[in-house]
Length: 472
Ligand SMILES: Cc1cc2nc3c(=O)[nH]c(=O)nc-3n(C[C@H](O)[C@H](O)[C@H](O)COP(=O)(O)OP(=O)(O)OC[C@H]3O[C@@H](n4cnc5c(N)ncnc54)[C@H](O)[C@@H]3O)c2cc1C
Image (tube, rainbow, N blue to C red; front, top):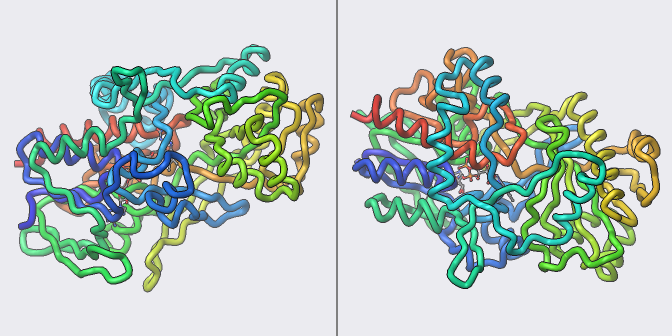
């Protein structure tokens, strides 16, 4: 055996899982496909960061009408290394729905509270004014002017003695913890498939430079799959371990509007926006996106005048989003293809919610003083400062929306009944002894809030259950 327990993936779920198991005395090995880089090795939210830490440099697409561009991390620390660090607990109504729909016990606010508290303490979740741009504040101001509920979302950040804040990603928190507790970590090690050996799991891996990798087989008694909502079901399918893995996929599909204001709104050079409008949640959430010059260029790429607009007005521009939780998709592997085929259908209700979200977002930005709005929809149509919501709705009605997401989940849902889920309520894969899923794949639905807090709270709940009931 190379380890008692192998954890596949070192994102928020994998790093936390490995650290807690190692701290409980288990011999743990973490296998991570991506490279091991520090947060400071790349400029946050830059093209360089995308090339180094994202799968396919951030360019992945879920097929559908409309298709959805999505991003996945591929590095030690997973999504926590590249994300904005916005933290929410799971809304109580979501937890009740999951408990009723899937028959999942210990799935209410009370039962999960200790796990959320643990995550909040470990990642120093709190509010910081550091780096919050005018662009972010304007969203909340527009909402307040309309009488809508808005909030500044807390983040996982630690403030140093000089008052500077730094994001508490996994390479700064649970990766050092798992190493200190004696766990091993092999970066640039991709698990291709896993199968049964004698009294153990055998994992076929590719290690080293992806252009000329070495084949390695590693063995462990127990395996936790924490490779994220696309790669975990793909691994289960390639290994023929569960026919329903990847039969569902949930996400927060988002459509965007880029706004031009009269004043400078990027006073912090495009720092992390934290404001969100929750008046229409959980159906629709509105928020402010990262709006560095590179991000503005991408957001306006379809507009003939986009390049000039950013060059002339970049500091007065920002991109905002409307995000919904409707729709369902799938992840399917095909023989000979390295990457799975991902599909997503946002559905009629999802499309209605997205159109409504864009109209409300336009209203909010107009109330905040926006002069012109550029929605991510074709045919390209500019919204003016005084267009009424009815005019905006009419303008957008025939448009095809360009959708994107950074929140993926729900591809191996947990359930109290083997017919409704891929795993039991604590992540054990139905019909496969000593194999667990413990990542974003488990969530039965899109939670309607930034998901990392939910992913980590369930991961801790499941590890404690394993240590009490299954480890011996
Ligand atoms: C750009 C961006 C911004 C985001 N912003 C926020 C935010 O502000 N707040 C929030 O709550 N959430 C945010 N999210 C979502 C959040 O990051 C994810 O919900 C979270 O990272 C999911 O954790 P995970 O452990 O399930 O998967 P991941 O973080 O995806 O980690 C999976 C890891 O497994 C590795 N892996 C995959 N396949 C294999 C294999 N075969 N072998 C070995 N290793 C493998 C991957 O390389 C990856 O490192 C954001 C996501 C992105 C992409």
